[in-house]
Amino acid sequence: DSGVTQTPKHLITATGQRVTLRCSPRSGDLSVYWYQQSLDQGLQFLIQYYNGEERAKGNILERFSAQQFPDLHSELNLSSLELGDSALYFCASSVGVAVQETQYFGPGTRLLVL
Amino acid sequence: LAKTTQPISMDSYEGQEVNITCSHNNIATNDYITWYQQFPSQGPRFIIQGYKTKVTNEVASLFIPADRKSSTLSLPRVSLSDTAVYYCLVKSNDYKLSFGAGTTVTVRA
Image 1 (cartoon, rainbow over the protein chains, first blue to last red):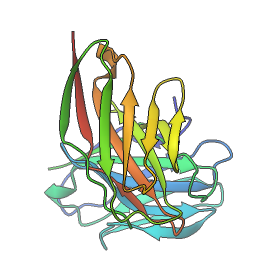
Image 2 (cartoon, rainbow over the protein chains, first blue to last red):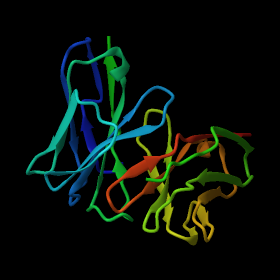
Image 3 (cartoon, each protein chain N blue to C red):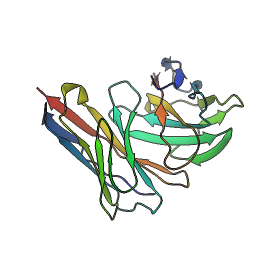
């Protein structure tokens, strides 16, 4: 158990809908990262937050957005969902933003868009 | 940001040593290299991290040559439970991240 929690574990929705994925980082961690992993594909970095502020953006679509709240939990919002958005979404956390810091991953949210 | 390239898959037998090499030709001076292990339907788990030369912990070793254009994860005496996907990650100090596509390691009895 990494100490990172994600809810829900599974989510089934329809095309065109909007969903929100939630992540709680490890106690004491200020950085949160979001990743997408499609079937049989590697990890695609989406976005990083540190202490409430956006720090880095990866391959995040304009239909997707995220935020980190004062209590440090983070939410990833996915809107106008398409079939291709079906994937595992992982959240990871680290203490800070130093390059050598280890990321600890949550168990993921499996999203299925029908 | 350095692009990372790994072999797609590797097969091994129990008790053997497995070496997985990740290429990162454009790695920058301050970039760090980290390796993760992932089992099906689970989040990646940290294995080892390094900047240069050799790093060893209780589960693996990481070899990084002087030019740092590649890194090799070495898993000694693998067992069936080491069957997983292994990812290398290059992280820069301007918050950029590059995960490799992953190497599926299959350990057979």
